Length: 124
Image (tube, rainbow, N blue to C red; front, top):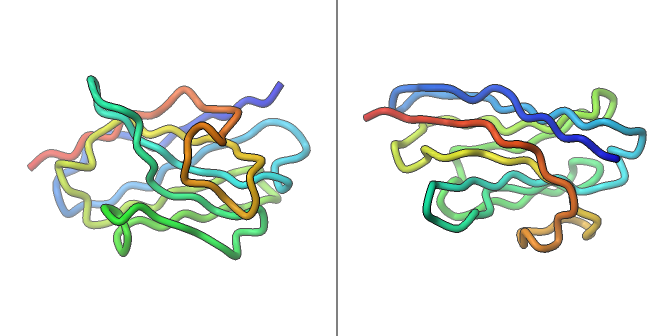
């Protein structure tokens, strides 16, 4: 059973930065693409960013491109989301997830394991 545990969320002012981490259990972390999604209450979960197994390829939602950076450290079984220039509309619960799709996926139905989420709140 794979477990994904997010951390690093919190309250930040607009224009500020946060770095989310997602630690994965198991020995096969480097065999899977990873992604970040976010969800606001009452709305669908949206794609944010995804990264290939090696970390050499990434893809972002237009809404975060140029502000967010996804990365991974396979030796630590961890994927990160560096979020800069945060806006109030970035407020959401952020989830990391694992995909068997190669090189990566921006569709949540192609992700099989999900973390419990971490709250990010950006004040204006």
